[in-house]
Image (cartoon, rainbow, N blue to C red; front, side, top):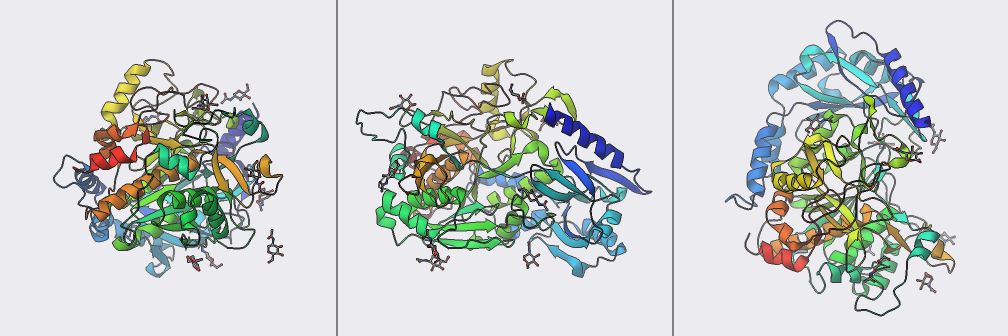
Length: 596
Ligand SMILES: *[C@@H]1O[C@H](CO)[C@@H](O)[C@H](O)[C@H]1NC(C)=O
Ligand SMILES: *[C@@H]1O[C@H](CO)[C@@H](O)[C@H](O)[C@H]1NC(C)=O
Ligand SMILES: *[C@@H]1O[C@H](CO)[C@@H](O)[C@H](O)[C@H]1NC(C)=O
Ligand SMILES: *[C@@H]1O[C@H](CO)[C@@H](O)[C@H](O)[C@H]1NC(C)=O
Ligand SMILES: *[C@@H]1O[C@H](CO)[C@@H](O)[C@H](O)[C@H]1NC(C)=O
Ligand SMILES: *[C@@H]1O[C@H](CO)[C@@H](O)[C@H](O)[C@H]1NC(C)=O
Ligand SMILES: *[C@@H]1O[C@H](CO)[C@@H](O)[C@H](O)[C@H]1NC(C)=O
Ligand SMILES: *[C@@H]1O[C@H](CO)[C@@H](O)[C@H](O)[C@H]1NC(C)=O
């Protein structure tokens, strides 16, 4: 009951703080801040950076072009847009710009105090709390939960006429906590519980220890030599202070991909003061997993490691590296890259429960992801490691109606423009992961996109009324695909598992954090095939996956996305919200792409 109690407490605190909006102003948004404690007003002289989302000029137009150019049946397929073409759809109209800038000007914030996103659709303005309180007719407070201390207002107001011009202003109602989706070390019991298969088979120990060789053989990339290495790039996104160590990568390669030792490297791009030190103590398990497996699977493909600073500037305590969703900093940076420097494939193994992210903010970040895919980028996101929801968090309820039970979909995995990747285990007979639940379900923020209409309705009619009331049947279903997600053998400096008594840094980890880089590696190799044939990269993958490429995936039919103290959604034939359309078969995918 404890968490439910704190949830009620914070709701009470919030309504007590809710002031009557001042004349001309109206409340734009408020958050239930589930589980957070309001520790009292923030110091008026603290600074924070407001992120202001200006209404897009024509997102519907961008969406329409994107669908046309990613539909394999269309003559426009693969004709990706340029940075300038995409930005023209996003750039706010004059009226919007004037209205918002006029309002800021009234508070002494002239254009010189504004930093812009590349399309001018986000403005970043650094102000002191006292000014933010007046600007948004609110009261910034210090909030605390599970060791996270942040500055938020919980609710905010705007002059009513600006509602038509501003989608959201943060940090106000964003109480999300970004989680990494795994790199979960296996405990003593987990490791000893595995039944070692004594009989030597052609698969060796793959069923218990997943290596590069196992994945190459399982997903049929063995022997493929990348050719378009001058133009084809794979991006790995890192957050929360995770960093990747080159010495550890080389140690890993000497065990699992000896040809690449001393040749492979990655380029680090720091964003928002992210750092990637290379000392003998640096490196974290998450980044070790991401960088070692993408390199091992795609070498000599060039890999860029985007390290976004672990704290947002508006975090109360910059020393606490347990920060908040920082997708916007990454998005703003990557969107500014010229077309020829933008990686065609990205893997991200982080996310938050959708319910903790303000819907307007999620929709705007998702729109930014759409704009990237429109430039020919394929975005893979891990689907989450708590199945349909985090049982221990005890908040599988609707925060606006605590009596209503609710599964907890994950963002950005729920954004319809990303390819969300669930987890499998066992080789060669894959089933959904069992040590943790493969994240899956249905969005409460994003409606079901047309590309998955047939696949998802088939699943829902098969499911019938089981689990009715727990999920939103009209929402976007995820994940889209899957890949192995447990028992990955990595070399990690801060190695935590039990098998290190002989001093080895080799250990087993898992999570959909393993699945996303694995699937992304296969996509990067497909993009290599495309580029070396003089074809454009794949870009927005989902319409292609649901219409054609599912024929090149291994359908996974066993397991479930357990969570919230339920067995969750079951896997079955065809698409399911556990393993999506299935795991990749590179040879079949290459053959299917031959004619597209
Ligand atoms: C930073 O986080 C730790 C827990 O990880 C917490 O004990 C401490 O109070 C936090 N510091 C501040 C200033 O919030
Ligand atoms: C790896 O790349 C980095 C640049 O990102 C460079 O500073 C470093 O010298 C390279 N290391 C090797 C061994 O090539
Ligand atoms: C980066 O660090 C500089 C210097 O410490 C600081 O002024 C700036 O606000 C930081 N930027 C971000 C995005 O955290
Ligand atoms: C790491 O480097 C430091 C300084 O060079 C050295 O003193 C230490 O022994 C090294 N530790 C390991 C584990 O290699
Ligand atoms: C799940 O069950 C455990 C043990 O009975 C309980 O403590 C927890 O609150 C339950 N969680 C949910 C989301 O129902
Ligand atoms: C792989 O491991 C699982 C779980 O221990 C077991 O059920 C399965 O039979 C094993 N498969 C093979 C091919 O060894
Ligand atoms: C269910 O999904 C639809 C479509 O995305 C959305 O409009 C609706 O608000 C959602 N319902 C709830 C209760 O979240
Ligand atoms: C250390 O132990 C691990 C796990 O048992 C084993 O895989 C590895 O080969 C051992 N290394 C050495 C150098 O003995």
